[in-house]
Image 1 (cartoon, rainbow over the protein chains, first blue to last red):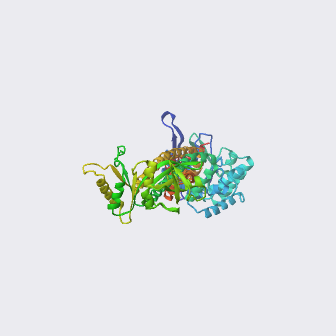
Image 2: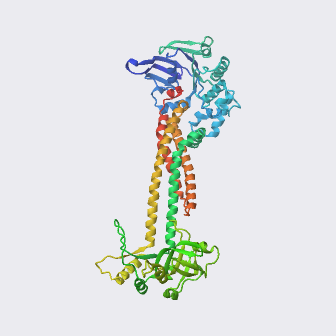
Image 3: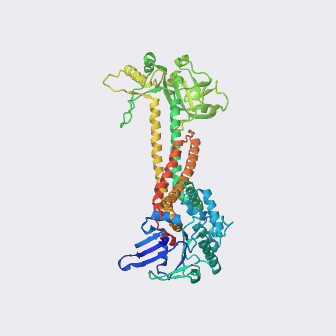
Length: 234
Length: 403
């Protein structure tokens, strides 16, 4: 028997609103993602791609159905347990970088470790290491305002991987970047996926960005419209 | 972790220096007012106590008039104390170290072209012992001078400075009211009382001289009795009452028409009046602490709203509700404790200035300071709790979407 998938959706529904105004963001989605995979989630706005990403990232819970993460019924966990799960296993990269302003790169990267209760010396060491992995040695004392968009996104990636997570959830990671910077970021993510076996789930609406992924899942109207493997990976 | 949070809170306070300062103002003013009140209050109490004990230890005073009863105005008897009362006490009272009749009047004293309004006291020699007065130059009047009503007097330091500058007043003559008298001694300076009365603006003379030349009658205003070390003042008080009732022929069915007062009791009463007063003023000042607390609550709500996105990030990467709650609670507490510390500094400075101006002792109390710190921390926690909870309860997805 094969190893259980890292992520599994079983008849997952996410419903907003009541009565007439009721909207099904996800309507009975089934999918599974294996450990070490690199998945792009695509689809027009309102298709359910953001909702499914929030559930995958344990930021949200399904209204109905089962969301399994690491074999745990993660959809049934309370807020605090989901927070612990995120801290231990999930790294986030957002479109708008979402770094704390007026806070140095190193401090931003240390942030998830603070919530693990790690001592500051060790925190600093791991943060420097993570910044090194994204190619930002020597920038650790710069604040976001002193860094370019591409560099800010690298800091965000460093913050996401400093905890050595199982899963990296990226929401339009290149949305605010020009083409050259976008491809640099994607190459970095590809490398993390290849070198560490880091599972990546990335939401994007740009096909050339999605092309970096091994598998592309397209959503439409709360359901999976297509699920394709990249030609050479197949 | 807590240290980390405090550092974070301090940084956030530094980022909005002006805003933080304005927020703190309520706490600063409140704490400063309470600290100043309590410090000045305890200084005044200490001063009152030391003044009254300087009047003489174990001192009792006898005056005419019914003892004051609560709720009724004091009644002045038209029957003053007389020489025979003093004589009777001298003859029969046991346990007294010193006994003296004394009367007092404010009279204009003139020397050359200078004049000064001075408190003039006529007394026996026992008065000096009973009230701890000392002669630092010259001599006290003799028994013979008291008997004959000689025109001699002693002056206080203020009187000397007014008429003689730094020169010795001994042997000079001054006019006290309509009599002239020779200065035979200089009294030791005593400074001001807690009520701002100059204790050195005095002239002392034999009681007989005072009665004849100043008052124009044989009345005695006050009899001072100092208890010896072995006799409790309460016991002496009873003995005095018995003797005076006898000399004044007050029958058992009549009330006293004189009163005996224990200076230590008066000291206690005055001290407690002062502390009640300062307590009330402090309570009023405490209201501004409440206002300050509301200010903190307001600014923390603003801060939580402003930093919604930051809260979203923190929640997304694994902060628990508890962490966010603590972060904002610590920030509110740091803010209000900072206000408390500034308030303590200002309050102590005010109290220090006041104690110089009023010449009372500067009596800062560690307990009061610690209480102020604790109380301002409490205010921060109480008023910071609701905004912090609001931040902690945010939905990470909503918070991340917040612009």
